[in-house]
Image (cartoon, rainbow, N blue to C red; front, side, top):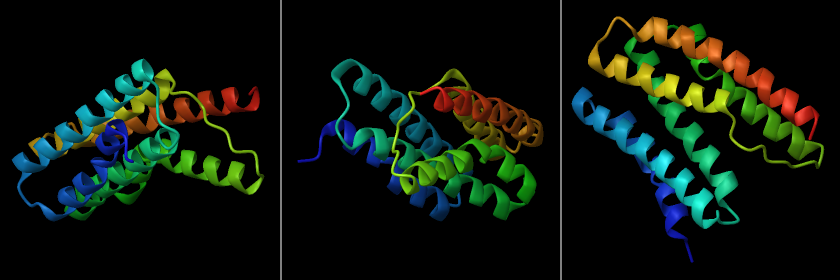
Length: 163
């Protein structure tokens, strides 16, 4: 049986598809807000009531699918260049590589969320909101998010090496 917290987490997958298919910026903004709220609520829920067995894997997968699809739209619209989108997604790309490496080495591990990672998520959401609002802040927010991503990668790597 699917736990309600996992259903809330999995909601980000259809939201990712919706973001790709919807053309309306205001509706896309609602999709981003629902995705962000679901991420916050499922995290609080898991911390206070305990996560499911699949939750620690499902949550980052759903997060990464959502941001990848959303930034594919940003890239397709020409609001950011390929290197800028890679910068915004750098923490996520690094996390995928880290997961694959630990899986190949048969040393699966999970790292608790860290402040740097949370700040990257906030930066990604703000960049998407700026894009949807047609703001000139899209590019500066993308670069700031890329910088925070570098710190988050360093921080997670440091913690992982001492785990």
